Length: 79
Image (cartoon, rainbow, N blue to C red):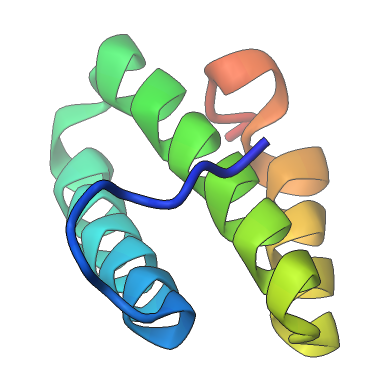
């Protein structure tokens, strides 16, 4: 489950930070194919899904869930 960071960020800032980190990691992964990075992407997608659900962002929750199910199973890229 997503845990709020210890820094004084609002929930929407936390979601924004997770999205920014994911975009960066996913863009880097397209070149590196590093399995450890794939695992971190899956972990961050899971955190994003939980945070979005807790804040009532249904679309973001569902999108993160679909990405996990279709592209990042078991912390590895499916493609």
